[in-house]
Length: 89
Image (tube, rainbow, N blue to C red; front, top):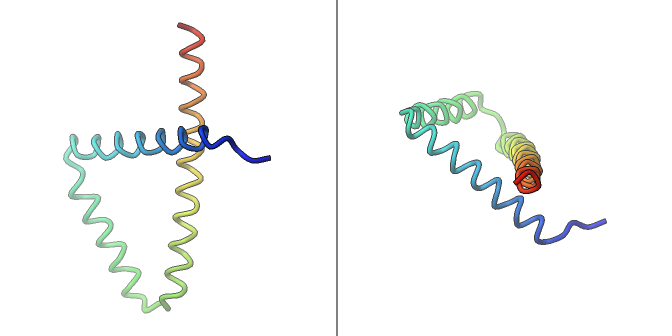
């Protein structure tokens, strides 16, 4: 059973809003330079171990897949909460 394209678009919009809010929160707290530093450190560690690029790409793909699954779940939860607020109002 396929999903409704409108529901998919709403999930993407909610996930984008959640990421934007998280980014703004990091910027407001002054943690954004630490995130950049952490990403650079993680990249350096991956490259230092002399792993084959194919293995690094495969692991990166799995991380991206999991991240998208979490973002989709969070968007669905947020949509569920919004529906509950609308019914209460």
